[in-house]
Length: 213
Image (tube, rainbow, N blue to C red):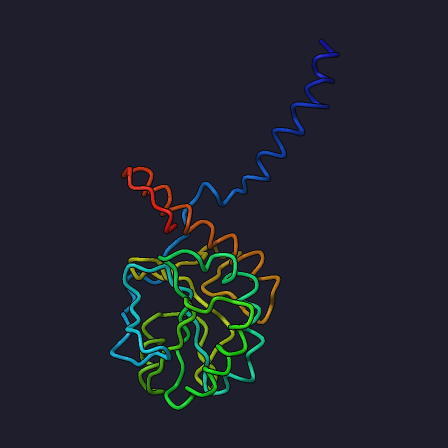
């Protein structure tokens, strides 16, 4: 009897513990909705001329502000930690809202990323300062935009235009700070995987699996 207990502790228990931690607790949950049904973009211009919409796309959403070049390191962090890993998914887009008049600065960001990244899913969209502020206010977030109408945070918006995050008081998170690569590699990557898992599970349930996700 003692021999069986020893064998269990030495061999079986470590395997069970490994499987538990490797799977991740969040793998069996959904990512809560922070703000439901956010407004779609207006008839705003994009850098590549495409009409950009939040509908039917998983969107990583950012706000550049007027000093976009000063914060270019944030976009390189996001590109390395999240974008390059998932930019092959057709149902995914990265959208950065910028004040009208910063088109040249945004193009410089794209030009700097393009030598080592397929930038097709990077979308810089331009609107007036008033429109950007109104759109951001509609997200009903705790954080405010800075004096340049920007933030280092990015946000996850699902295909139904729900802004997703963590609602637990101890680890409340409505956005992910691109200034800190570790936050992108940990919290954001974990939460992003949950969103993808949700859609994959739904597609499998409906017998409509697709390589898009």
